[in-house]
Image 1 (tube, rainbow, N blue to C red):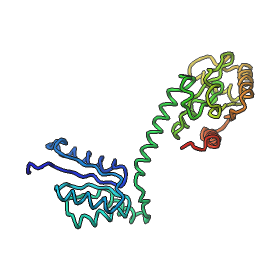
Image 2: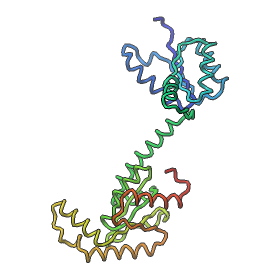
Image 3: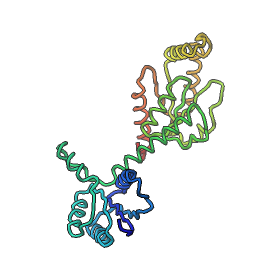
Length: 279
């Protein structure tokens, strides 16, 4: 091996993340070579034949290896044609697999650069939303309500937490605030954008059964006030009074409804109120 500097050109018509990850993964197999020995040049968002020509001409001049990804058929053909004029060591990371899958699936690829980056962005947004839902469950951190996309509120065991988690998996930042009879809800619930707030209600008999079953699972006496039908009716009536005073809050009855059904109804309302919502 000569002492010349080792050059690698990473070329992409998208963000360049894919080709860079492939390079990093491959270099782990060469334990006798230090990454510091390599001079890696990155060329992303390549769109034109002139850009391709300039990159390959420079690669040929300094004897660099060209590693490229191009989902655009036009850009890929430009690189392949350019390599005939500037014959350097090169690797097409996605092209061969794309061609094989296109033939096997009998379907043309979208050929849209940056789709993987878009998917990754959505993934990280979902993770952030899930973390938000967990952190802001059951009235914790009322100062964060302003940052939520959706704020669920209702008496205990009206599916606030399960709905928060379910909606967060769909990318919504959800907080939930319990309504406890005799305790004033946090002021921030009424100060934030009221189009975010969603009320939850349930049939008293169903709620009494749910609470009794929960107490039994916890090894506690189900005959107490928490699961008392009389007490529950008072709680629900009290929550209805709050909802009536805040008419901008849509109220959903969760009685005997699947989580997915209620979540879908909430999403439809939020989307109508927030047309710019990305989820």
